[in-house]
Amino acid sequence: MSSYMKINDDYNYVVLCNNIDKVFLAKYAEYPIVDGNLSYDELQNKIELHTAKRVVLNDTFYGLRDSERKEILDLFKKRNMKFILITSNIENTLYADYIFVYEDKNIILEGLRDIVLKEEKTLKKLGYGLPFVTDLSTQLIYYDIFDKPYFNLDELVDDLWN
Image 1 (spheres, rainbow, N blue to C red):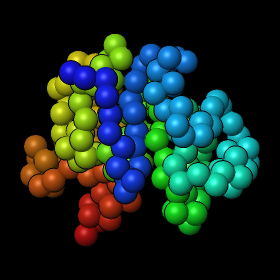
Image 2: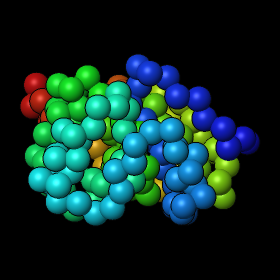
Image 3: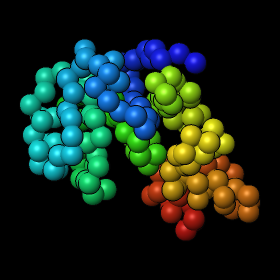
């Protein structure tokens, strides 16, 4: 596998990687990087100050509540900005259109979110598993409750009740 990734202006990305260091982050030097464990207010302010059309978030969703993450994502949409979220948290893949999964600085999986998250065996072999909602809906497929995996908890709950 290669370590090169092509960025499409239409997508938000999640880069799933366990070994994030300065060398790895250097791949994204052309974009402003918002680094570290920030509070909601700090993250919101940094995003509002950027004039770039794409920002790299280096594990900045850690510690935010779901409602705060949603507001940050809404802020990106409102400002017509895109992001590349670098993280080791599989749950964060749900915010992406496109996912790159790295192991030892090489791309192991890449593709649209729905396609990459179907690679359960590979993700588990790399130590990730699936996001909770996707894993639950996949298990419910086996019981003929659903016929497709879900990537949004609200949609899954709505369909369960209907």
